[in-house]
Image (cartoon, rainbow over all chains, first blue to last red; front, side, top):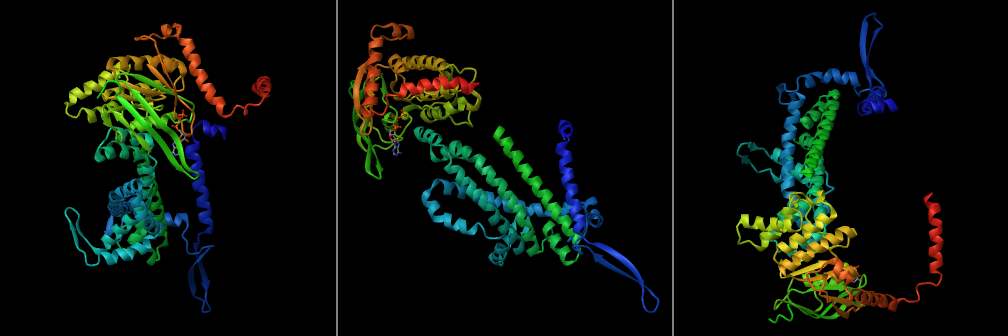
Length: 293
Length: 287
Ligand SMILES: Nc1ncnc2c1ncn2[C@@H]1O[C@H](COP(=O)(O)OP(=O)(O)OP(=O)(O)O)[C@@H](O)[C@H]1O
Ligand SMILES: [Mg+2]
């Protein structure tokens, strides 16, 4: 193993080994189509195709690739609303997630500051936050629908929003808000007394205290919250698109399940995973940049 | 306002509520500082020195009594008192210069930007940070950070300087250097100063008077010692002064009396033997 480490190959090689092992397990439990030709009682040849295997209907790796390649190799194709290249779907999902996520940040960060700064505010709202936090997106979405049922919102530059889109954005926002709220609050409470004393001694105005002391001191915690929130916002996308029937990775997944194209479900899962990972890396990168600055 | 007392602590008392009733930390502290005077407070750890200083700073509430600075009763913290703590408490996301500017902007808000920048640069240069003023605290040594802290305090043009063991975390060489820096700035600015320290030599070198606090609870002022050395002071001259060792003895004796007053019997007779045994064991542990 030493020589692998010396060549710096372990960073590439070991993950590949891991992936390979997973593929083997996947192949092992997935089903195959088996075509058999039999002669029936009248002497005619009858071909029957049957799926066999531990999980007979689960497509194996090769089958998944065969069925998905057109989506991956033509990632920007648009053949219909619910038949588009995988990058197009990803893009559609991302735009929705970003909208909800930004709302979560804009609402969640000030809430976190209030929660961290004011004991009264904390006592008033902390129980509510704790109760709303574990509620699943599947539960929020119907409420969102009800909330925006009669709303027709025209946003300049974005066009009109339908009730289901608004419900989806609402769900993403409210589900992904909590890590930002709670981490910001923890960060505010963790500000060393020394820094607060500086603000007190210099008699900084509340606004200046916020900008010069509170926000910079809380920033690392805030960013941890932002990163976790983005993860959740992306996690919610499937639920939001599934229930609203909106085109996107999650919508496609659900539609393909109903159409019995199981390979595409796996394609969607992998896409969601890869995009989620990429988003997390991106946030870490921004975070480290910010810390170095 | 008489020049006789620029800062006046009047029956200053601090107590915290505790399960066993009020825990009185310091009680009835009466102290007067003349304008431009340098007074040091010494006493045992935990007797309440910092508490007194924090009350003057306005960062700890006063239980009873009062503090009058320049003829006005103090109420809460403010930039008229420059504070240097043991840890420099600089904001790590700002450069040394920006840290100083934060205060200067608050105090000299009527001056224009260039003037304010000059003030910050001036004090940072005086403490010897002319070249390093645009570095962040993380890039500075402990001693340099404390220099920034001193510059920040003086740059406010404060009525008073409050120093709580400002050199406590520094090695002795840096400590000597910074004592000189502090003394120079203090002479130049003629700021009234109140300092807390554990270091008897530091107290003798810097102060006009040394206030010895008795041990808590209900700590008070036990003794006040006038330091007769002429200014400007030079460390060697001070140490060779015929009064130096007698005063030093007196301070140490004061501290020792208060150390033994409480628990003279705690030190067991066999203590030296144990420590000798330890000394013998140590080489074995090393090898
Ligand atoms: N918030 C508080 N609540 C209760 N007791 C406190 C509080 N703050 C300080 N004390 C007590 O007040 C006493 C004096 O503390 P203080 O920090 O003033 O001592 P000190 O003389 O500065 O000690 P040192 O030399 O170690 O810095 C201590 O016994 C401490 O336990
Ligand atoms: Mg102290």
